[in-house]
Image (tube, rainbow, N blue to C red):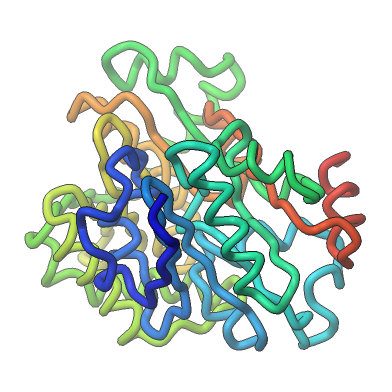
Length: 346
């Protein structure tokens, strides 16, 4: 077995050392490169066929600046005060993967080797967050002295049939009527949808950054426009035609937009932007741009699975998505253990 090596940036990891069996979008090298936020403190441990991204969180500013799809999103489901006390984050290392899956892949022996190395490396208690049940990492942690609890979920929609009509048929009668009302509202508002992939979207990225920033500010985050724009360019540079933008405009003004990424037979709705005005609300722009347009696109391209983010679960379930639990593992005896147990019961 090769000794574990630590890297400070994805680009520092030799391409041939990135586990080749990482096929799910969130575990790919491209995803780790594109989704890395400026000044992101994530580091990586690699050994043989296994890899674990990790970071430590010591200050509230690090917590807030973390990508909501990567770090902060799921922890809001823990009881108040578990990980944060007023404006202070408990001193501690949080160790985690790049997204909705944290399956290091490879054999259990390789993964155990990395976990042991990480435990030796970190001076603080470790939380392994967003671990997919049944993954190699979950099996290794279950055999060690870790308590487990659910902190979030991943939303998946396997598409039935061959067209959007088949999707509507899978919904129950009440939900189908609601979906049709939302679609009709979008049509009445004379909303025009523009779909752009890869470099064709570059001239429209400032518009998307503005709309995305509106959503972030609405939820209490304050990303800088330059950082948001820089990350959008990263996605375009790395994924090219696999990153798709949907813009919804009325009266010549973009009022909603969605960014999605494709990988094999899956499309991920990663980010949404929205003007919180009367027009976007009356047009049901969120539901149409955030769900229906992406589902239509998936059918057109022969994509069989739509994946969405780790929030607004009720809206997703009502539109046919299945929720898969995402787990956190913490050392027994830490202040987090009881909260995880409570959350798991819920």
